[in-house]
Structures are given as C-alpha cells and as structure tokens.
Length: 329
Image 1 (cartoon, rainbow, N blue to C red):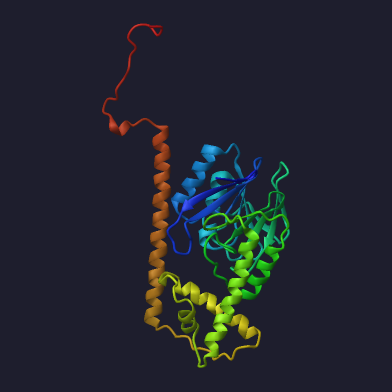
Image 2: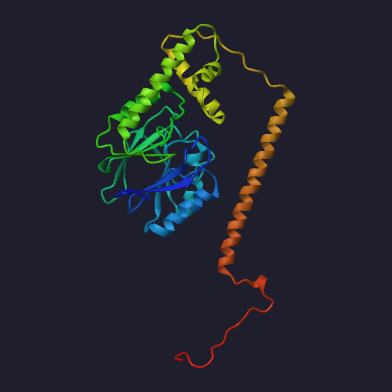
C-alpha cells in the first residue's frame, strides 16, 4: 500500500484485541530501504514482508528500525539481519531491554534527533517519545509529512502507557511537528487527521484523570482495579488488565502531584513448591519453543532443498520426453 512518495505499508491482519484490525510494517526510501517494525515471531509476518519485497520492490532492505522493544515490534530483528544483511537500529534506552533479540553484528544505537539519510533526498528523523515504553520512538519524514507513531498513537482506540507524565509530554511534542499530514501507527488504519487525533489523545487522558478523581472523591480506599471497573464500564473483558495498567499510571502521576494518600500493599510470597513448578513450566515452555524454532528452520531448509533438486522420492523411473519430428514442425 503506497502511503506517500517514499513510504509503503505492509499490513498484516491481526485478531488480537490489543491490535485493532492489523499490525503494519513500513518500508521507507528507494535507494536503501528502511523497514520500521517487523511484527511478531510468526511466519506470516516474514512471509508478508518477503512477498511484498519480491512483488513490488527493486531494492534490498538496508536498515531495520523499531519503534520500541515490545515483542510484536522487535521479534524478527535477527531474521532481518540474517536474511537481508540489514543494520538494526535501536534506541539507546531499548538496547539493554532487547538482549537476546539483537544479532551479534550490525546493531546501530540511536539517540533523539538522529537523522537517517536514505538517499534520494529521503531523510527520516528519530524522535524519542517515551510513555508507552521507556524506549518508544517515532520516526518523522518531514518533507512528506509522514510520522511513524508505533504504539504511541494507534490507528484505532487508545494506547496503554508506562509513564503518563512522559507520555503527555511526548504527545505535546508530536502535536507541534511542522508539516504533519499522516500518521502511520503500529496497529490499525492510517491516520489522515493527525493533529486532531493527537489532541483527542490528550483530551482523553485528561478526561480519564477527571473520572478517576470523581471516583476517588466518593470516599473510601480503593484499589486500581476497583477504579477501573467503575470507569471502564464497556471495556472488552480481555482488555481489563491493560485498562487497570492505565489507571495505575494515572494514580502514579496523581501521587507525584501530591493529590493521593497511598496505602502500600503487601505482595504475596510464592510458596517454594509453586515457585519450583513455575520455573519448571518456564523451562519446559522454553524447550518447546526451541524445538519448534528448530523444526521451522528444518522445514525451511527442506523446502529450499526441494526447489533445488528433482523429485527423486516420487519416481522409481521419472518420465522422459523425446521430440517427434523436427523442432521446426
């Protein structure tokens, strides 16, 4: 899908309630292509990207950037390095979080304000926009007015956040960008009224804060879950924990503002037998995942080998062909 002169979107259908409609990988530039986000560790994401490149592109992937460390955006970084030889771009705040997902070579650490020159006059600026995560970044192609917002702003619904104070500052920064025409989110449709959407996000967070204050003003000591159930009355039950997380970020901000009295909770101490069982389950899950990845790699090798060699297993004596008459007949 063509977004602007230098930007293409590869949209992968997604049925997760956290990912409205689809998850999107973006390609920027023509001489040396930058990919932004790479989807989950699932073959359909790799297949969609390979298929799009094979069908429409006349250039190789030179750079692979991510908007933040969450698995549905960063799971295929090693694959991008191995398959295309791409340099991997990560923000300095995300590098320590991404250990295990980064290739051994080709990692480029970025800071706020870095400009990525893709040739042909295509220049993308890196904007550190913490809030959804500590390492969240947006990429801005100012000449074409295209902002890649990751999960800072979604194509549908609202985003979860780790730090509301940082998040509000990030939204205000994005609202002031010059020449902003379209936002390309990590999930959901493109946003063709970007400034209005950013303002909606700011207004929504302010409204949520007022709702929380009203609930707390009714008196009594409440947990974040109690508050969430009162203000998120129509939320999909599968999103209740995410909604509770949003309430907690508001409560941390209100605490920092000196508006709350906080009664510290007491976490449960896991029983030794429960801890041992959890560790064993984690070990078994990791072993199963490793076997699954090994089987997938073996299947890919076999598929490639099948393309390179005749179908010997199918024939005891393969059919042969001989021309009747002259080639000119």
